[in-house]
Length: 122
Ligand SMILES: Nc1ncnc2c1ncn2[C@@H]1O[C@H](COP(=O)(O)OP(=O)(O)OP(=O)(O)O)[C@@H](O)[C@H]1O
Ligand SMILES: [Mg+2]
Image (cartoon, rainbow, N blue to C red; front, top):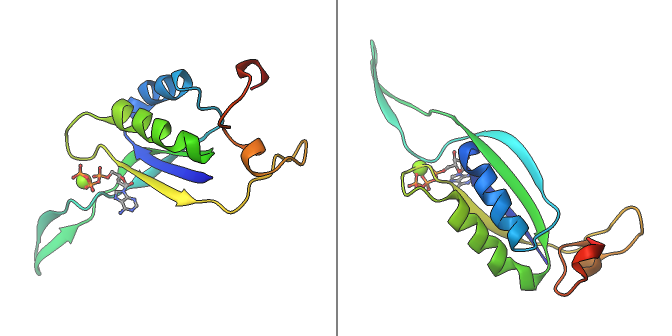
């Protein structure tokens, strides 16, 4: 299992959500965040030059998936969030030790976007 964390442009969220839905990825968390992508701006001050670290509004997605869903999920994120301009964001893939569905006590593969399922059951 993996936890896929993506930082994307807010205006690309709908496109990403649609692609994830079409890829049958179910279950995700979305947060509004502020981020910095490494670009700096030189600012003149009375004491000399300083660097301004500007923060931009971004959206963070967290998606827990079984291993067989990693590539399709990353593909949906890369395609849906791409504009080609600097600041499109990042996708991180993290290992996950265990996942529990609180309602049923099910764990791991049974508790995330699974490899093989009845789509009506999701
Ligand atoms: N190394 C990082 N760790 C955590 N978050 C990051 C990292 N790099 C980027 N982000 C997040 O992603 C957002 C967008 O980053 P951005 O797309 O500018 O990355 P980049 O590596 O500078 O790529 P680009 O060259 O396309 O701008 C940032 O505002 C920040 O929220
Ligand atoms: Mg950047």
